[in-house]
Image 1 (cartoon, rainbow, N blue to C red):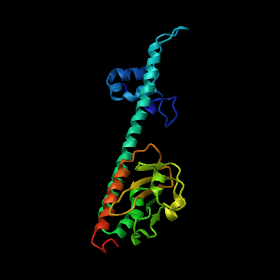
Image 2 (image 1 turned 180 degrees about the vertical axis):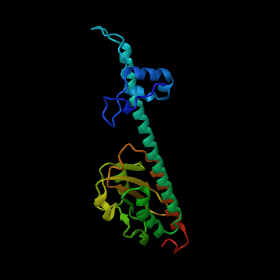
Image 3 (image 1 turned 90 degrees about the horizontal axis):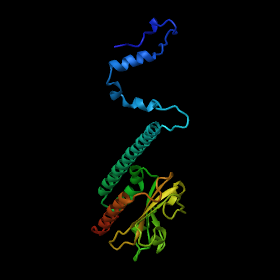
Image 4 (image 1 turned 45 degrees about the vertical axis):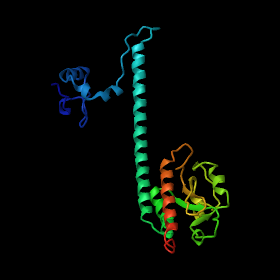
Length: 247
């Protein structure tokens, strides 16, 4: 097999620099290694395909098609990379959601649920603020009067999320503190989920806020909906527990 010349054998090359291979050397190497291009197909991406004709006014369709196919291959690679990155992101979101559910399942009392949602979920879900807010209950409840619970006017859930809607994603959220409390100033984008906790409790909102454009219309809300349904069940369980265990 023809080997590249050693730099000590090339009088015209400076010390430390390999002399460029000649066309004949490359041709000899390829002839002696007929499977080289099969083993290294990516090299075609950096090569120019020769035109079959060089006559003025004659269009070489083969050359054109090869160039177009190369462009399409580049676009397919970019698309595949986007799919891979999206899949990784979705897997990360799913893993975070599962961790948030597990943390909530360990909370038995109302105070523990509030702590998990407002303090643990922001870290687990990679957002800046998570809060719950409720419309006025039929009967006053001291459990809904805590500083970590937002107070909504009657009808606010429909107003903020929309009639017959379970979720609303906001690219640019504006909150006066009603939903996010002292964290309202941090929030740029938000996800609002309708809560129907039952157990005699009023409708409410699970609000997630981020200082970046984490949420925007068009995103899927299935995982957020799942989180909200689990939260509803845990809230109902804590309020239906024997008297005194919800505090």
